[in-house]
Amino acid sequence: MHTVNGQRKEKDPDVRMDEGYELDLTYVTERIIAVSFPRTCSEEIYLHNLKDVTRMLKSKHADNYLIINLSEKRHDLSKMNTKAMEGWLNADPLHVVVIHCRGGKSRIGVVISSFVHFTDISAR
Image 1 (spheres, one colour):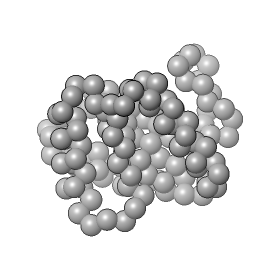
Image 2: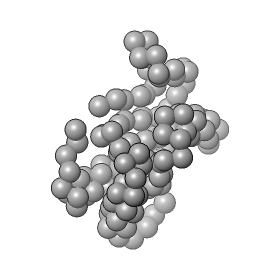
Image 3: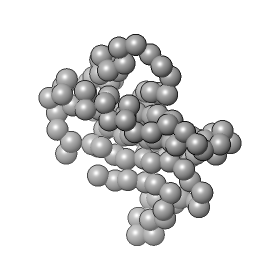
C-alpha cells in the first residue's frame, strides 16, 4: 500500500509533496485509489491539491482513471458506484478507479468495502 499525505517522503523519489498539502492519497489496491481532503481546507488549497492529484494521475495512469466524487449527496451511493467501478475496471486492465471525497474518509471506506464485497476481491 502506498500512501501520500502532508509529510515529505524523502526515500520515495516518485512522491514530491510541498509543505502545506492537505490531502490523503492511498493506493488501496493497484487499481483502487482513495483520495480525501479535509472539509476545513480552504477552496484555494483544495483546488491546488486537486490539480496536483490530477497531474499525478495523468503521469502514472494517462487517461486510464475514473474519478468517483463522493462529496455530493446522492441516494443509493454504494450500489451505483460499485457498478460503475466494476464496469470501468473490467473494461481494461490498465484502468484505475479514484474514490474522492472532501470531508473525510468514511464515505470512501463504505464505497470501497462495498465494492470489495460486491466483487469478492481482496486488497493485494
